[in-house]
Length: 192
Image (cartoon, rainbow, N blue to C red; front, side, top):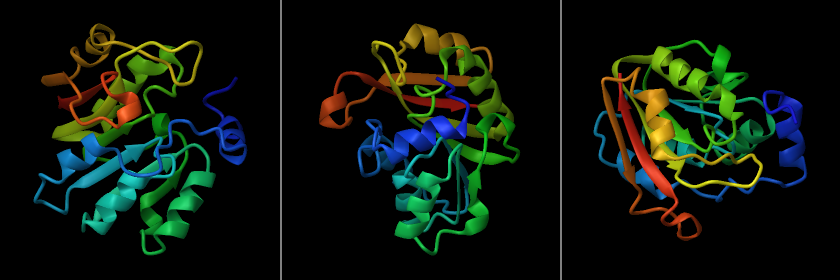
């Protein structure tokens, strides 16, 4: 299982093995962004999958939403649903090699999909890509899974990755998860 290879994820999409995909934007993420008034902020959604959050933000007038995924199947799906999503904001490639500067990075099921040995590197890359004062926000699982992906985790583990890097680290139980994930998710906000 080569989680860092586009072919692995292409097979998952082509065989409809996409249990992480809820088919619409994650309520905790949408509620967070509904509070923002500045529609010019630079947003990156790594491991975006079918990018329902990106579609929602774009339709709400956020002008600088960028997505990146290892494989192009979900990126094509986004473009077919949202033909006016800017091509230059769609990146097919490796998050760990991505370059740019963002005000927000949105975590929605990428962290649980990478090999757990890469979690520290994920935290470091998110920190690197954020503008000073920028935020990593989103949802992480607060439970264990057999095998993976998804790979589970807990708050203590997450603090070990993010606390050394970010000036503010907030991890709280989600009160507005989708029903199947109720009680098993935490909302994160990390400030650089």
